[in-house]
Image (cartoon, rainbow, N blue to C red; front, side, top):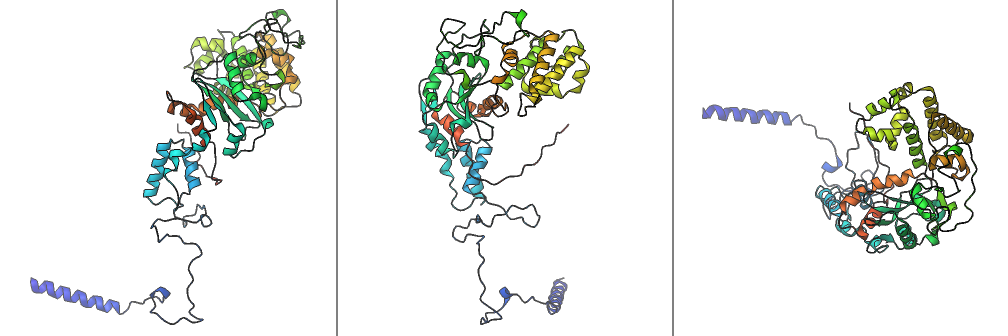
Length: 463
């Protein structure tokens, strides 16, 4: 057995030697023996950009060599720079600890460029802390101009509007950009204050409103407090005129009412000294839209097919809410796009609903049609025929159409309402321990260090 194994081994070695005779080696410069350089064989030059770092052992790329390509041949990893990593942490809304954890994991896999600091996130908003002051009940910005300089946003008070509103968690003062192309900047925040005249006065004084004099966008409750009116649906609840909310016989008939030329406390429901002039106010298109739909639903016959269809379409809403017309923006959009709902409406109801959609498209949005006055008048006419009561928000459409801004999409209060959702994650993170770091950390997430455009995978609805 041993002899047979030895003979097979010798035979295999002989066959390998025979195969080596036919091997042809390529004539590569890297495989050549050392020879003298000449014109035919010049000294090789190193590449312009080094792709590997011999000093640290970490792979990194230069800013000039990084190219984004979807081709299969370009499978080299694109390493994160400091700016790109910062923006990734912002997009993911990561805390300081989780940002540092993400950076350390990327560092372990050599996916960071040379010089990227991991511990940077421990004090990432340190420069913004000094721009906010914390009192017993309020956290506010003490330097508006300095805050915009830190955010690298050009500041002009005429390009920004002040949004004041309260949610279940807090009351907020936010600067919204006219045109809504720049992020919303919070400048005051409180978890203990409620919507009241004294608290609004404190907030305006803290942020130095008299210096900046922004236009104000808020709901009608806040507008009434800012203009010194008594809260609630009082007899003279309009801040522009002496409209009598109780004279229902004159609603939809009388269009011109005496203007509020003189502000006298204790007269015509004026309870406080006004905090700002009425010409500094933007009427809220979103709240007007919600109110119009509420008036429409309340006027529906509760035994009709249309009302039953609403209850079937929104099973999560109670019958009491549907009866009072309490719907939010996304729910209204679903009803507007639902063609089946139109088939359940009667003639007057269908005319009123169609006119409501025209007002939303041709007046309360970014586009204002040339015949917007006629569109609004048609809405009021159909609402009157349907039996809708005139509320304050319907009254401003009836008597103060010229008071609205030219482009309601640029000064819409919807972006202020959306801010409640944007800051909700930060509120949960700082709940019970809110301080200046809360607004400072939120403002840090507003910055953008890297201008690279990233492609997103389109979402597909899975049925």
